[in-house]
Amino acid sequence: MQRRTWVAAAAAMAGLALSSTALASDAYPAKPVKIIVGFQAGGPTDVVARLVAKALQDELKGAFIVENKVGATSNIASEMVAAAPADGYTLLLAAAPLTMNKYVFPKQKFDPLKSFEPVSKVSSAPGVLAASPKLNVKTYKEFEELARKKPGELSYGTTGAGGSQHMATLRLEQLTGVKMLHVPYSGGSGVLNDLIAGVVDVAFMTSTGAMPNLEAGKVRPLAVAGPNRLPGLPQVPTFSEVGLPDMVSDSWNGLLAPAGTPKAIVDKLSAAVMKAVKSKEFKDVLIPQGAVLIGNSPSEFKAQLQTEVGHWSEQFKKFKIEK
Image (tube, rainbow, N blue to C red; front, side, top):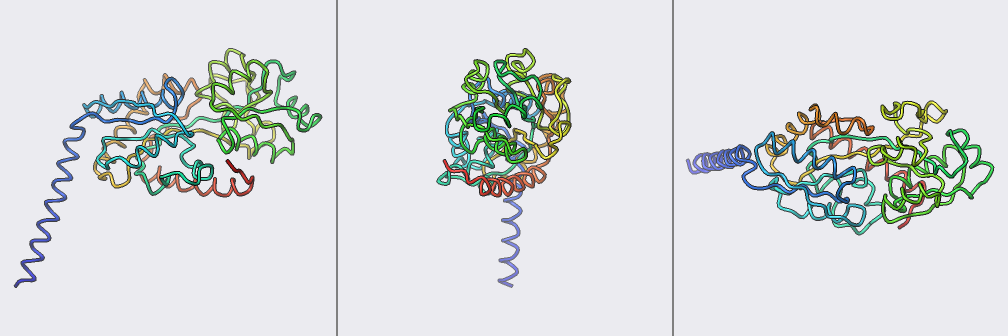
């Protein structure tokens, strides 16, 4: 009799817990939600974050506010969200470095897989190999021929050792056998400015960040590291078209919450993002910049993050990258 009473009480408590979770989800958001971005205002990740914030605000009828916490290749923002209460009121609009940084910053205070609940991958954008207009090349083939003739003389700019630009260029060197001089910068604007000025010869650019300069000819696009030519650069071939099908590099943006955030809230956010990426506003802003709109489920996004972390583990070992 006593055992039956205990079991009944336990079941009642579990039911109350589930009921309170459901009520919390129904009421969400009951106060402003912060979306933390680890990159500067006006940059490609910030643009995506503000589109997401507006879409969530319209769909969920609450306040979603973007906050930029720049530093340590987005680690400051990631650490802030990882340590936040798991209640859905602090979110992370992350980018590709999330799955790479643990190999660059081994003392970081979060784990890309264990510290977050993936919500939805919003978009991805291929890398574009671009040359300075002062470099005497007009096509990818001309660039590769020049690099072979001058091993170690041509320079390439990146946002730092172990970043996506650096890893993409190392991959290109591996596939072609060419060797160039690495020039690291503290941010993407420095790379772009010096590429325009001819201080560095080439650099991988993210299409969503560099499209205006690529279209205007301030830097010269040579090849796209994605499956298709870009709508804004229809004349520029993919790496596959120039004989390098394995030269793939892309940058993505996705929404995550702290680990332990109730599933009902995560699912509510994910459904809103999946609806948003189909909107005219997202298409009008991001597709002309070369972005691919995704909007997947939490489980799909989680699987992709797991695959990326494994991939970068192999790549960093192969290239022996050290910060």
